[in-house]
Amino acid sequence: MNFHLKLPRRDFIRATAGLLAGYILLPLITGKFRKLYAAAPMPLTGDSLFVVQGNDISKDTIFRMIEKGFAGIGDVGRFVKKGMNVVIKPNIGWNSSPEMPHNTNPYMVEAVARTCVRAGARVTIFDRSVNSARLTYRASGIRQAAENAGADIVFVDDRKFRTVRVPGALLHSTLHVYEDILNADCVINMPVAKHHSSSTLTLSMKNLMGVLGGNRGIYHGDIHSSIVDFNKAIKVHLVIMDATRILLRHGPNGGTQRDVRETKTIVFGTNPVTVDAFTATLFGMKPRDLMFLALASKEGMGEIDTSRMKITRASV
Image (cartoon, rainbow, N blue to C red; front, side, top):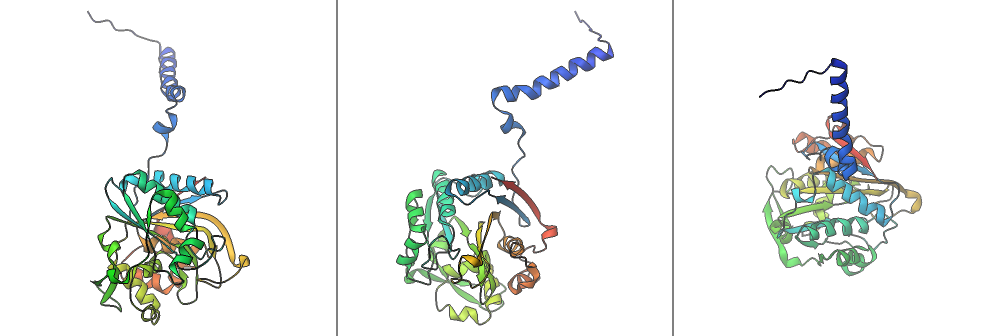
């Protein structure tokens, strides 16, 4: 037997509104509102960035910024799986304390390494330091950060560089690349944003010099073309830019606190060219005015026009 209940229009509207209100309020009551109605994670593509702004640069805030960043790009699982070999490449070039942005912020390194270890990866952290590696690793705070996270921090072994051909090279037909980078399932590039006397800025693209062997002097003859070649030869899966503090002058290892600006910013992206182009604007620079970015753009390696980028922002 079929029954047809006819409601007056006014009652129908009220009933519908009540059902909708219940649908909206129920997740609040059950504590699921955030899960159901939060903005969907942004799928990172070559021209997209996720930018996290902090209220300060304390350890707690930086940990929450990294957590927010990974959540915003769809969780660490999009890049790191159980059993993977992950290499985190910070800047650990200089015998300096974390108060000067000569090296990557150790709180950031610890937070990212912890996240990858929790995902079930084996994590290795290293850099080919300019100053003594033993002094640099300790003074920067990154040795302790690695130990806190349960990651391996290793000194570079000169016997482990391998010759790699550079496709479409501008200057170097081959480069000597560290074996751990070549064997990694996932490479996370974690540079610090700072001034550089030769390349104007040193960002994620130039940070790859720290995985190359040989005499660094050969790269400085035409530093901009060299930087482009680094990025043609080496595959990076994720870039996490340390712009919590930036060095405005006297880089890469000089200056005083007057040369430092706290921008309290971390940038997540998959394309080093695009990440660097955005980061240049934090210095008040136009990306195209940096020759290595102009060359990379000409080579079709990434978007450097910020108006064409897909930028999602979050704050902590």
